[in-house]
Length: 141
Image 1 (cartoon, helix red, strand yellow):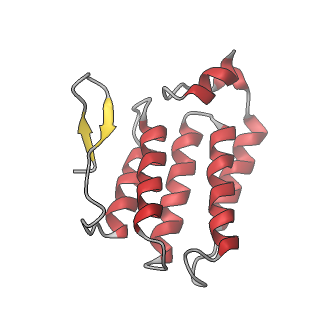
Image 2: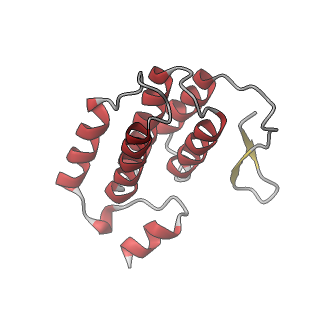
Image 3: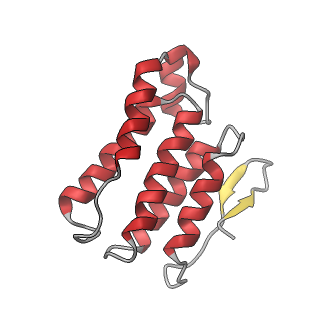
């Protein structure tokens, strides 16, 4: 599976070979599940799954699943009140769109922009819920 408990009691992503064909819908489903999870590490895990999805699909497979994945990852960071990380994901989405890496069918959804705008309107570094990521700890201090 993509998610498995680590030997140290934390969360980590399972390993797979680049030859293993994982449908893009599986990646986006895992990201959506993480976006509604209450686990503190959910946003970081969603970002890790997104990175794997991007690495596996360098051509347009199904742009709708990529939009779901990006929006889900942004939503996971929204749940942690982490506007800077959500905006980072939004910029990553825009870079991929500008590069044409996912083909002409991939167009960023309005939902991703709206979530980031809403997050920044309420953002306070003191309210960022840590996901174990170093950037979050720098924002708090």
